Length: 219
Image 1: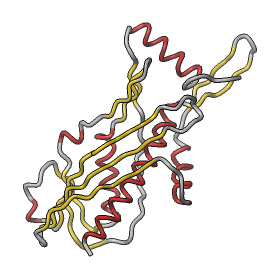
Image 2 (image 1 turned 180 degrees about the vertical axis):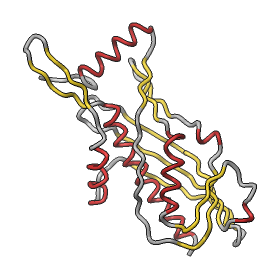
Image 3 (image 1 turned 45 degrees about the vertical axis):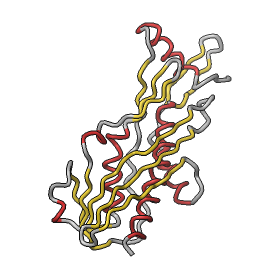
Image 4 (image 1 turned 90 degrees about the horizontal axis):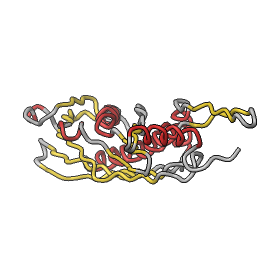
């Protein structure tokens, strides 16, 4: 059986819903929470991670003819950023502002500089995903302010990438499609979960890049 576009049943469901509602259907992408990152060991500096409301509300929407694919970055990224910093620093506190900055060695406020996805022509193709995140850093004791840029993509290049990709794949789901004319049935992967897996890999790469640059800046 040949599948066209993003997948026969997935697209058929979206088409039916969009025709019924008269507009494109919102399709949330369930970005997985990556909990393990590369780390060079814990440092003793205390860190205040500032996540404001604007960051938490951030959503990226990739609009297609039949659907709006919604990436809830503001919901998922704060947890993953905290996880990555916790693996490099012994004391990390999250706050919505930097009023208590004198109590910490480092103040870090992230900003999503760019996020790009390219929806594939077929469901079995990977979703090209790229992300750039900036850290605005204040070294309280050193009196220095600077910006770090982290870059991440969806490519699988290392053994660690392969392990992560396999783990994220375990959270995928599928639709069951039954072809009445032939009597055959097949499980069609849920595109939203496949796209989420690629986003998870890109974020993992980006936060590892930021972590490496942050530690280097403190040397």
